[in-house]
Length: 248
Image (cartoon, rainbow, N blue to C red):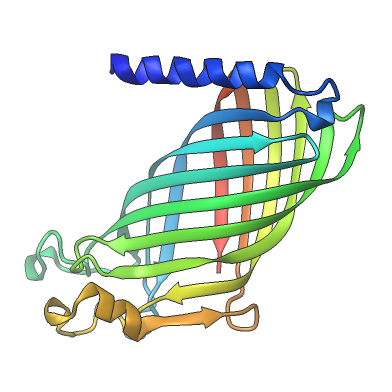
């Protein structure tokens, strides 16, 4: 643990040293920042091939954010993971006929997201306290049901476009974001994971090859939005809380 603290202190020192060599124009100052993120992740899905029951649940998510760039253009890498137990709302199942870990009763979902944001300033107002950016994103998300032979319920990786707005005051930053997918590689089971299939003899790579596809806006309609509050502890270190909604 002491080694971790020492590495963080050294990293922040190097960032401060690098900032000190930058130009005096604030728009051209190259800076770097690390963010610690936590929040409540609410996730639900419906597998209509098997049932109209909505399996939903919520749990804490934890993440890291790495920001670098200038005021007029910058890059953010956001990493987030969560473990969520999802139950079938409105579906009455007798536990006597199912094991406690049966995916019909509960889906133990492992969630991981990695989002690359590339942002370019469109407009700033109120003495640059409020800014509007256009952005391109590369989104990778993985949802694995760990108690269903650890097969992916959904894997997506693709590019999209959207808008990002910020309002800053001293050490406080409020932001909102919206983006939509343009081209996405998707892995999703063509059959219900709850239906009888011999998954035990199917390798994970064979499963992916049999169930992947490229999707465009005409086959994948999705919206990703988020609202975030961020507080700067140090110049290169911040903490934040975020509400994120993904609908598709």
